[in-house]
Image (cartoon, rainbow over all chains, first blue to last red; front, side, top):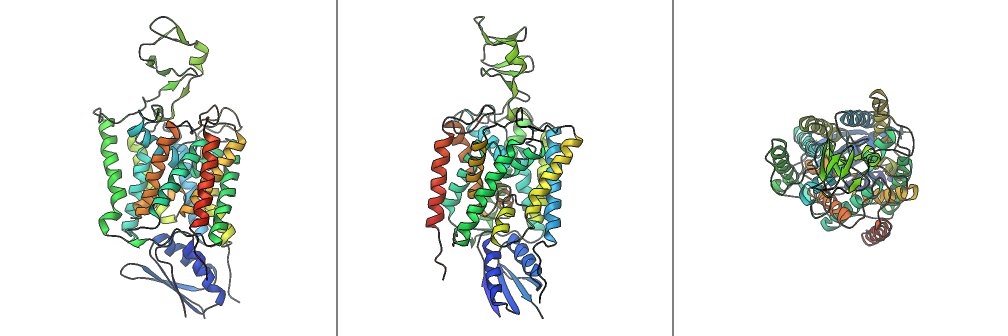
Length: 69
Length: 411
């Protein structure tokens, strides 16, 4: 599993970092972000790349989990 | 092989938000806002700056606490709180963000409009905006290349909850001053452009049949005549007097509610007028381009329906025809916005979401407006001001300097 910590980064760095992590074609990917915009943008990018995406709320950030079968 | 999309479902939401904002902006013009300026984050923050620093910065013609800005930020806050997205955060290159906001405002005032108004101007038929939009594309693509090479302003941190409310709180204070002015007891230090005031080429200001400036002048047989009988503005000039932008405004409640509604729409849709070009280059995604296209389509259709559409280069409201100036100014603005990570509209919305850094950028914009007017950098309908080109050169150099220095070593 690959993890990306994109907390505190401005647009579009969370999407760039997540997309970069996809180059290894992981089956599971976790991206941590702390703004609603990053949450939405990273989620829709991962969905567009063919992943199933779920978001959970942690105390001070959002945890985006993407997986594909 | 997994599916792979370059246009996703969010394109529909962003395009829809663009259409709503474009239509609302055109409608706000019909309600009294300046031409092709139903919504302009640069112009409206400038007017707010004029309301407080107008006397110092020669901004008597552009002084009004624009309720749209207050509403937008409130709307962003309401939507963020309602969806549990309110996050107090900040501390990422605060000083540089102030400077980027400052530069964004100066360059926008050379073009005469922010990245939102550029599209709204085109939607009103103002073809000069094409040069501005080409400039935005050039500046944003340059910014995207810097991002690709590792440009990064650094991480923001989680901040104590009250800090996230500073932007919203300050807008609350502005609303109090706006209401005091509206109900006839303005604070002594607040300047407000007279409603419906018009200026002649000679600098006289007329409101209806009254002459506001020079103070001892009066209107005689259609001419502005000084106390000693000398003609200041001949009748032909009075006839052609142009409205002062600050004096053109929709009723306060309409502006406030429209701002609030658009703030909610923008927060939910992640509307941004800069990200389209950037994402196209950087991550090959088209969704955000729909925001700008929606803005253009919505405002064009609404302006046609409302009979406000005027196709051409000349005679456009609050605009000039200097093509190179328009292009260069928006190239600087586009680069500044790309480096900030969002257009000025988004900076206002993020301020409502608790992003203290975004609010610092907004404060930088307000400070930039004062300087732009005090030091003859802001354009007028006649064209570029004396100091516009030197200012653009300095700003471009500063942006490039920041872009080279704030680079992360990519492993």
